[in-house]
Structure formats: C-alpha cells, structure tokens
Image 1 (tube, rainbow over the protein chains, first blue to last red):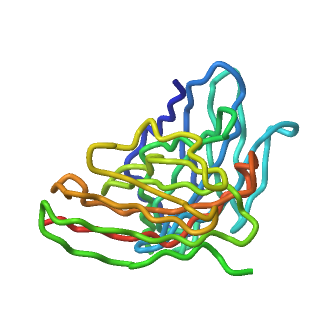
Image 2 (image 1 turned 45 degrees about the vertical axis):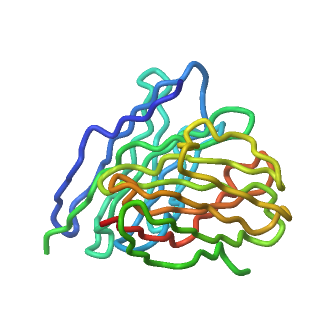
Length: 113
Length: 114
C-alpha cells in the first residue's frame, strides 16, 4: 500500500525567509502528487499538483514543488514566507483506479514576525 | 460555482449517542468522499461513492459507521453508537469521475464525543 511521510511535524520560519517542507512517498509507480493547505477551522485548499511532465510545478500563493523520482520526494518551497502562510500543510498521493488520496501527517508552519 | 456544503459545522454528543452528518457535493461531481481527520493527523479516507454506489469502504468501521448516497447527489454519514475516539473533523469532498485533481473539500464537521 502507498504511504506518505512528512518528516517535520512543526516548522518555524521568520517572515520573509525561504521555506521548504519535505514530503516522501512510497509507491511502486509514479503517483499523482498534491500539496494542500489547511488554515485553522477551514477545509483543505489545493496548492498545487503533479501528474507528469515538468518536475517543477507552480501553484497558488507563490508556492512551487519539485518532484524527484530518484528520491521519491515532492518537496514544497516558497522563496519568501508571509505571516498569512501560517497553517498546516499536507502532502498527498493519488493512486488506484479511483484515484483515492492518501495523506501525510501534516506539517504545521508558524511564521515569526 | 458553489462549493461542497456540509452540516452541521460543529456537534457535541455523549458517548453511545448517535450522530449524522450531511454533505452536498459540487454540482456535476459524481464521486463523493468522506474523510476522518483526527487532531494532529492527516485526513483518512472512510468511504468513496461513485454516483450512488460504493467504490471503497475498506477503512470504514462498519460496526458503528454507515454512509449512504441514495440519489447519487447528497450523502449522509452516521455514527451509532459514538465512541470517544470518534472525536474528529469529518470532511466531505467531491470530484469528477476518476479525476482526483478535481477533488474539492468542504469545510468539515467538527465532532466532539464526551
């Protein structure tokens, strides 16, 4: 069965600093890969997705992610973090005929002023 | 375009009571999902419908959880009887058939079992 690991449970960065959130997956083939953001009390919002092609994908709110097949990773990056980026971030893989999503445990991002 | 609607937003019950959650998907989305998100964890898929048929319910605790989507549109998830460990946010999502990239989530129902 597929699995998703987000090694960092909490990350704190200063506003304006760069950000990288790690995601590793375990699956026999290349899955569909996603990053979602969840603000307190809110539902999940899709930031970006990778299906095939260019391994560097751009998303909303200035986020990007890079798929590295050799490392089974799909890390999320942002060059300059804003205070409003404080939230929980989830990596997910979509596999199977029904393309069901399997989520990682999440990384909580805190932003220092 | 209206998003995925869920109600209620919050529910507090005592253990052994029953509770039901309702979800109305995005118009035209034949696939509907229910996820359970326990505090501090990522969402876990409980059940997936395509129209009114079940695609996958392998992680649904069938001794106490049930779900239906009788007319292939809105859906109800029920817990009977509830346990303390059922305290979680229950997220509903919908998508086009076999198009996981079109999956959108509702705001969730936060359940607290005392």
